[in-house]
Length: 372
Image (tube, rainbow, N blue to C red; front, top):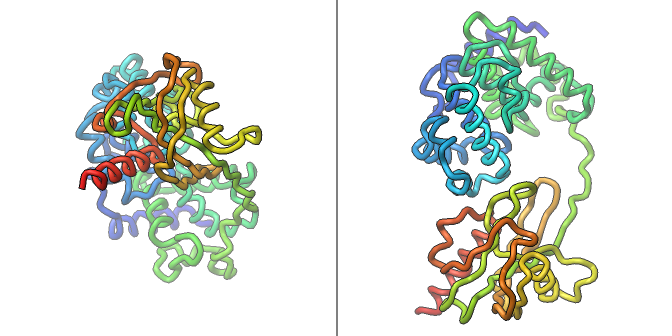
């Protein structure tokens, strides 16, 4: 590939086609490092049109590294609620505290120092160093992988170690060939090109500024690149959750539990329950067992509240939420980090995963319908 020509074409194209985003108030390469960091972490595995509102609210709530470091983790998780991959929010909070403690509240402009911060890997390092500090460091997100795979017409699976190594080499060669002072612009152009022109499936090749350099286009293989690995069967689990009332439903407090800090959805609150096991007779039996194992509480399972379908990265669940009545036992933190008896109206103060938010919506809808 002619890296210098590709880089120049990318920069020229970017000047005319850059999308307006709230974190792009300054040119790429001259941006506030905190803004770059937050926007790039939010954008990982998330569509940019979804990120915008979250970013604006986040920056209003935590405008500086110091503000984020000083915040309570529950406030951070609440601000992140709905974005998914909650480890990103926990890592941002922890990293901000480290930046305040060891770097005087300023993100370092050094690769080694950045990589020591929680949640910051090679991609985020490249984004921060190129877009905030103007350094010629490469980035490699899903969009860039797709662009480079087509430019070089790589016919090996995109997830293989050798392929990823080659893609990093190609990304570095392009950004290092960019005109002086345009490394950040070049990187952002690669991402934008992948998001808007070099899209999955059938790319818009006739609109691409790199069409003359694209080997896949020349070979007619652009729709076949990148070569994706064979999909594995996604496991599915049935899960039972309990809306456990102290007394009468909607007239008493209900029990919520906080998930452990480590693991899936760490630190978030939920309606307690768990996965249906082969030894469980049915979902109510599963729920009774899980509540004893998690909280040492005995319950009586009532009618179904709602059913929620949800897909995580590596598995899918069907969540069955049941009304339940507290029978006996003082709640204990056996399989959870904390627990609370709260009113239905108080749930908005706690960060919940999407599945449990849907249970809350169902409860409130039922309450409204009963009141009419």
